[in-house]
Image (cartoon, rainbow, N blue to C red; front, side, top):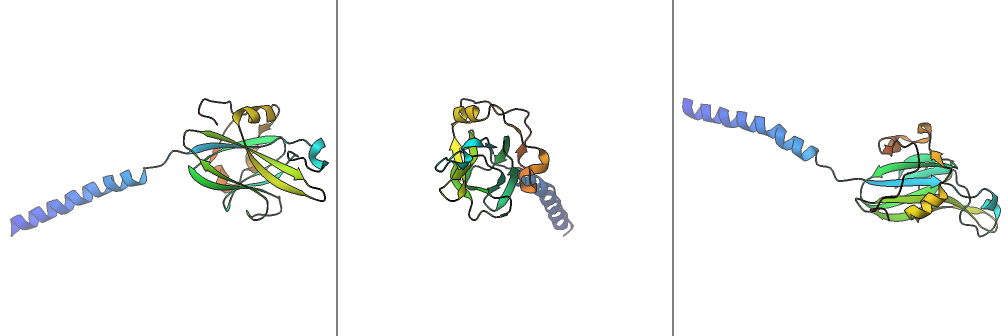
Amino acid sequence: MRSLMRSGFMGLALSAALAPAFSVAQVTTTSPQVEVTFYSSGSFLKSAIPGNKHGKFAGRIMDGDNQLAMLTYGHFVTFKLDPGEHNLTANSWMIASPFAGGHLKINLVPGQHFYVGAYLESLTVASKFRLEQRSCQEAQQDNKTTKPLKPEHIKEYGLLRAVTETSFPVCSPATP
């Protein structure tokens, strides 16, 4: 009987010792993230011309229902987002939701860096917000004078994902 209790206790102790190792291994498994640079560099002068799709933008940038930042004209910001399908939104400063605004459905692929321009498109009577996926080369041309977005314009959800940069990201071979 004593032998049976001792082996039972040893089994229990061994199980207790191994359990944290297995739970830590499960918790630390993460998927690679994808860098996405948002920027606003549209033309102020062309903003009022009907049909112009690249007017200057200032407003909210969202990933699904989560607000990343309040992007201001002449600035850029890069976030590390999870791979997969995303619905990104550019919206007014006054509308804290992804409804209305300009939407971009995008599949973020690990190992690639994506560039997204935020714009104001001039219509005949009004304007609408737009997000447009750009190539790295197009983004480089668009951002010769933009500056990093100030940290106070990055929202709580975005703070956890923001990449600290001092200049606009350079193109790499894995960039579309």
